[in-house]
Length: 113
Length: 115
Image (cartoon, rainbow over all chains, first blue to last red; front, side):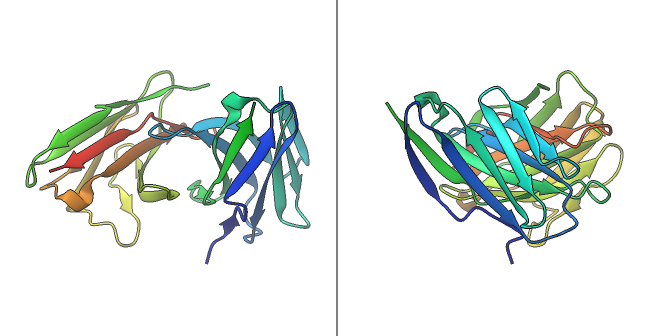
């Protein structure tokens, strides 16, 4: 049973527009969430995170929103750039536990020039 | 952000040989390191978690005698694939976090090809 779900395997966006990547989770014990970006044959790169005590965190073009009641988070990229084309993984952690993150399956983002 | 390195970045070996992959945290002390495996077009699969100075905890289905993990210092963990076979060919990625952070940082990965 997947505790972290990224239901869209792929997303295509025009350069300059907003990219919205979604992530849902089922385990209410998760209290810290992270987004990673991954290019083929490379390790994931940390992008942005959010604690469950917040509902929004912003870093440059990247904003993560957390809706705890819906167990949903999203990553917004504005404006999208072709270099953003990659696979984006959502991950969730229980900080009072093992700290082992649970990853979603990833969403492949393609930003067209 | 924090930097994690892996060495080698890729390796080709004959079936039956053992391969060691190193994972180093370069600017922080990694109390916990994780080893992942990624198959083509699939998500990251956690293989094991290691805490410095103690034995690694392996995920279900991962053979601990096959994938030896050593986390001997706060900046180094090694994964040794023993008696490698072609089905062990994969992309192995390590990550690390220190005690005071929730975020873990990933290495660049090691591509293993067993002939």
